[in-house]
Length: 320
Image (cartoon, rainbow, N blue to C red; front, top):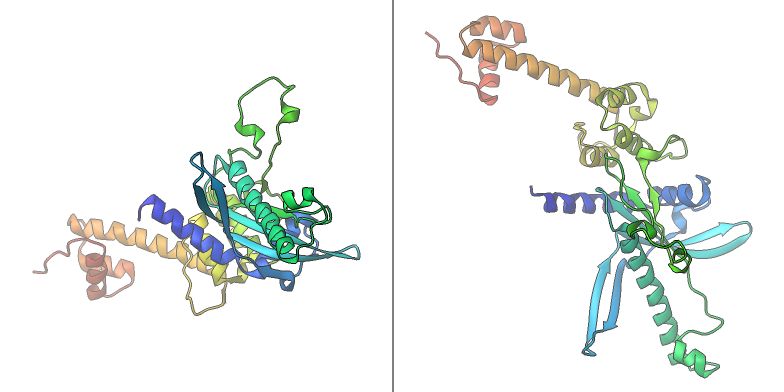
């Protein structure tokens, strides 16, 4: 599978995994309210994630550009006795994106533009403009925009060394210019930078912990074999671990949850056994060990050993 196709699979699976309202709300609550359960799964409503940009080129011909967000949901927030609506977007990045501030800014701007256009259509239909200024703006003094918040969720295993703001993408310049530049920051959720995972109660917690430790085999092994959180993990999260962190945890898709600690130990034992078998195959091939003794060492019958040897790509010696 080439790199572009592999990235496409990762992006598709990330979107599928994060579209779950329980996981989506948990990410929102962590980023907005420090983990407090303010936003409930039932407070979320799916939105069209297609953003359309309509502009006129120098030849006055209309140019239509479409942009697809990963996820966009309408969120009803009940907080301090008030209720308001926020549009929440999540952009999953499996690799560092060195233009992420611009990408995020475009998505948010397109959405705000859509809101202004919808207001304009509504006022034209109702013919309720109060002044020529409102007519020209397509937006009245009483109109309000729904806030758009985009969270960049990093699902990679190497350090995020990309820019976190628009200013970081610009060269050094006279400091007096900076106050006039409208900066745009990304809201980055990077599991590799987290030190406390206790505010996550869904499969996001084991996934984030595995991502953080994926590059250190010793730490990863200690984490999975000693942390009770891994004794019961849903299969969707296990699939996400395998895809984004590169683990190879076996599971049955018909199962809802599995004990990752046990699966991890079984996988290690299998790896050790396969390694030992390869050594026996090599010794038999070189004539340094007879096949009967090798089969006994492997704990299988001679016919089973010959089958394993053949499947592993080794030539089975002819019997006299």
